[in-house]
Amino acid sequence: MIKKLATGIGEYKRPSLLAALFVTLEVGLEVVIPYLMSFIVDRGIRPGNTDNVIIYGCIMIACAMVSLFFGVLSARFAAKASAGFAKNIRSRVFGKVQDFSFYNVDKFSTGSLITRLTTDINFIQMAYMLLIRVAVRAPLMFTVGVIMAMTLNARLALTFVAVVPVLTVAMFILIRFGFPLFERMFKKFDAMNNRVQENLVAIRVVKSFVRESHETAEFRKASSAVQRAQLKAEKVVVFGLPLFMFCMYGCLLAILWFGGKFVISDTMSEGQLSSFIAYVQQILMSIMLIAMILINLVISRASGKRIVEVLDEEPDIADTDADPEKRVRDGSVEFREVSFSYSKSDNYVLNGISFKINAGETVGIIGGTGSAKTSLVQLIPRLYDVQKGEVLVGGASVKSYTLKNLRDAVAMVLQKNVLFTGTIRENLQWGDENATEAEIAAACEIAQADEFIRSFPSGYDTDLGQGGVNVSGGQKQRLCIARALLKKPRIMILDDSTSAVDTATDAKIREGMRKKLSNTTVIIIAQRINSVKEADKIIVLNNGKIDAIGTHQELLAANSIYREVYHSQQKGGE
Ligand SMILES: Nc1ncnc2c1ncn2[C@@H]1O[C@H](COP(=O)(O)OP(=O)(O)OP(=O)(O)O)[C@@H](O)[C@H]1O
Ligand SMILES: [Mg+2]
Image (cartoon, rainbow, N blue to C red):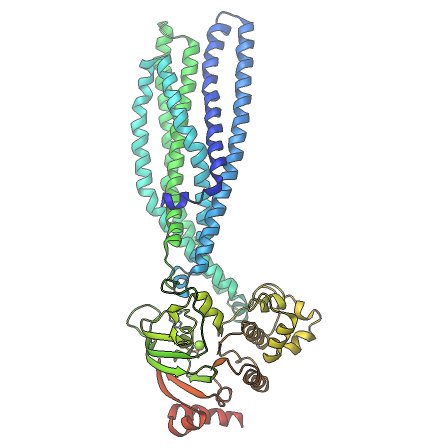
């Protein structure tokens, strides 16, 4: 895990090293100060020599100033290094998430991915900052402090030797019990973020169902769960400070007691005792700093683990067997005995599906809701991989193409489609970055979007707002179709893409596609028989299985499901 995260340091090695170097210099000067203190007492105050007090006092001030300067420098470099480190990790995790398949994203949940990209990385950043500053400072201060104290009075130094094991054991216990609690806390964070994300995405639905108070209550629950978990974890940590204070004051008391005796019996000077106390304080302080780092590392270990989990996740759909040069030759599609399940188990959503579509054909898919129409077409651009059988596009397995080449050739207008923040033109250019004005207009004409776009005051430069909130459902669907058309795909899949468009416009869109895209295979999923009536063939799906394949006339004559749907819709139409 450490190794994996350490690669995030990258170009920030230099500031990291500089931060550590300046801390070392800072500590170097800091430890001199108590020593000067003993000079002031023994050579200045005791003999009543004011000059010496002033000289050593000035040296002390100079040391403090320079040490402050080094401290500021090291803080600056540490901030630069840790912010850069976090930036690197963040963009690496984000990049990884972009490679995830639908399956991978479902596995983590989007809320959890958000926590990992934000909260977890913040913890790691803090830990890194501590690591390059405090983790250098504390052991250094400890070692130098011990040496100085030993030189001053070895017998007196034995007192704090007794305290160190007590503190060490206490810290070990804190970490041992603290870690699982922090891990649990992050799980609660995930749950809370999931709620926030779901609520914000669907805020319109929440409002239309007047579910605000319910949602608020649910959020409060999730938020209290975080609070409780946090309190529980912190409860363990809070023992740290009082325990430390207890040890420190106990130690000071012992030193004053024994040291006082030494001073009275004249085996130690007052100056030595006062600087000895200063060193002991430094030593204990450094132990506390070490404890703080350890606690922080415990917290960030949980975070680090969660980040590495994302980095280690293998995108389950990748270009492993692909030939990078291979392009999709034509728009033919073939399913050979395909079975598919979302959970990668025996719980098949699609079962033993076989059919063939020739290049350039128009194919309709009809079936009740939940009959796995969407599941079926998602396999063509390889949004999911099949468990059994094979999907072929252009005469070759979908796995033989790189995802880029395959998905360039297969445009899919998703059932739940989204537009992005930006203008209409920018959104359409997702289909083709270099599309000319004329190409954009032509695609919009086929999709029957040209007219309403032109009616907007800013036309193609109309800003869509986040997720395309500024257009109607039917307009959004037509923009999504135009966006897909701009890819000039060999296969065009429309998953219920005209459900919010009136029948006349729907007919015009199909008409346009038939005329302008005669070489493109078009697969239309629809609820309305009218949308698929003229297709070359129609696939009737029922419960994840193919019930029948044929033309409108054939199915009307031979397939009961199709006939039933047709008649119910005809009646409704009249
Ligand atoms: N991401 C998913 N994870 C797990 N199961 C899923 C997922 N998406 C769909 N399913 C399940 O797969 C089955 C088929 O769903 P699918 O979306 O393919 O149906 P559909 O025919 O497109 O329905 P509709 O007409 O309502 O769009 C359903 O039982 C559904 O519960
Ligand atoms: Mg569907």
